[in-house]
Length: 192
Length: 250
Image 1 (tube, each protein chain N blue to C red):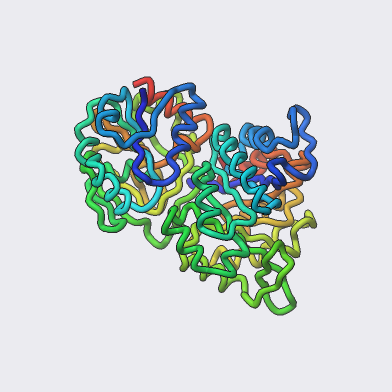
Image 2: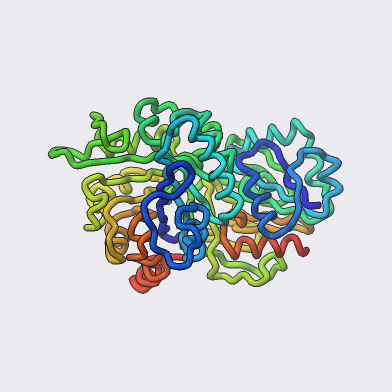
């Protein structure tokens, strides 16, 4: 079973809908035991970072998530919360990825909203996905590039479009809203 | 590079698409999900569903429809029409819409923009502006263009940004339905005055209208309805044409 972490951070059902379209059963859950036992864990989220982090803490999920050993995929805010810290609400993150999350500079339109291509490194997450493919992004904060960066995107500078450390993966874009290539990425994750 | 977006708009009444469509291989042209799927296959970047029913009992039909769209469509979509409160918006977002579009309610109660942004995030909150040139300024209209306000369009757009709106859907009533092109003047002014994305709407009649929009304004998206429904401007052809013009397009 695939667990989708449910912590009151926006419309996370869209991730479950995407898995349904791939024919994969999943459960929306905030139960630490169910999350720990799942074959794969997806950590989605849209919304504000400090509120989302407080919700995670209230369920002790901030302790559970970094200890997971199965493949974990953070999406958008989920990915950002897996970093060391974020400027949004001066929030301390889970510290899985060795990078910080910052607000986009004023010189670009914010939120970064729409389809953007990205430059990717070799990763099993990107099988059948190429550098010129576009994914759907919507965010006002970005993760700086670091040793864990496996894909970069250009918008007001270069930022991490995807991160990986051991069994932990994160994508800034929304694969569940990125048509065929987004579905491919989710399928790649599920096949890990 | 961030791509400019092409957005078809579907008018919904009692859970069905209204206005005719002439796509050949759609089993049921009145089914919004069928039409939406067709647009996704053609490469639409987002979809907007505008509910023109807006009576209370019919809203339940809309919620069911939003759930069905969310289950079948794998690109972002916005739902607008008759959203008056945080409860209306919340029901639509929880049913699976990525964004809600508010219009008259935002003019009547600008705090609603802030409340929605706090509850669901700015990225969820599209504020639609219907604007018309009234001789000495571009004036904001509400209630489907029936009511004139005393708001000037650029200053209202700035207020929307300050209040926490995530995106503006700007429709020129002078241009809407004319197929004579987008209102480049006001679209340029609004998109230069604010730092949130602007979707231009009203007046698209040809591929070159989108080219002019993207070359002459900072609008990040162009929206149209009938020219897509009737196949006058097929989306793949439009996108190919814009790419040839070196406009960043998915």
